Length: 369
Image: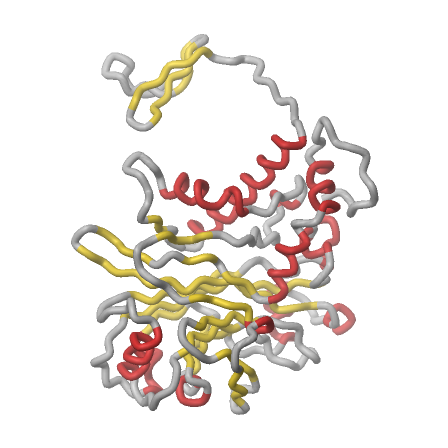
């Protein structure tokens, strides 16, 4: 059934053997194919699997009120189409079972915004090679220097340990006593920042078992040995105001913080950075809240705290929103998942799960995804 008005040229849908659509502002009529071919060649299946994973991540972002922003978006292009244009080639191909698994994080090296502002450069804390500053009061070690944003998430040593899911924005050297001082330090570190600009920190946190193994990619096949909590999206946002005299201890009043995310104001003086982290709970507490039931110490040993995230700069102007170009960053756990997805055996398992028609004989490989 077609919708719209065919006389006025904006019908959509099918009537008989004709299909009406609108492409880039133009009305298009095609013959209806009632028996579409679906050869399922490996190349087609692989591309569809990548496409599906990109769609899954986009949906997760929209559902969590995340804004994907692309200054290069054309007038006829939707936000979704702009995201897919930039990211399908970057996607991890997803297996048939995991494509509908709510615990699957759908993480890849996504580009979440493209724009004219110079944004921060994010790195993985465990693999950063520049000078490190050890902050004994926080019990962590952070990278320090210009353009540094460090995402950290690791395995803990005991069930009583705290969950180290964090992001640190480097502030450089200097005395910081107020929120205004922090904003001035950020402007010094990131020269493109101006008064009134918006800084948005996005963190995606997840507890995962079987870290560093293919199990991370197959939660529905392995149950609790894959992802053991749903990906939790959290946000922090504030406006650059270097004139603010709000004391450092009260800087949270200048920010929006999602439930489950906290800001440690002492980090500005102790580690020369802005530290955002998941609310400080023990692993046992977090596990019980996320999974329900009683914490099982036998399952603890292989559980890791994984975090992915983005720090985005944005600016409202008379000609529209301006943003920084940002690629999602990951802690070591998620990064291992991305690396594993590039192996031949993983690719073969994905193709097999979708019943690719021209699959070659598999040599080894994982269980069906």
